[in-house]
Image 1 (cartoon, helix red, strand yellow):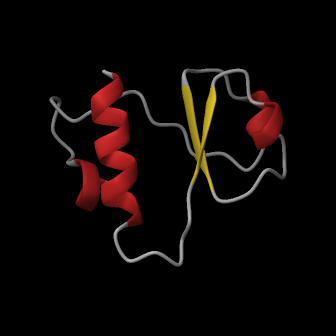
Image 2 (cartoon, rainbow, N blue to C red):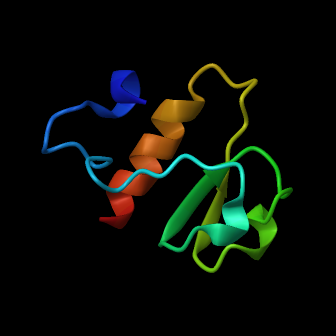
Length: 69
């Protein structure tokens, strides 16, 4: 994650990123996940579907998130 979003205090993920298998326990504005299982489809915020087979997927997700803040 740091490789794509940076690890300094100015990073968009600094103190905002939660990694969890149980998505139904997470609350926030955005959830990035590759499938609707384990609570992703029921997430209260916006679910951003991640396509891990795409070469530039993290760049796409990063650009989308940056456009929302």
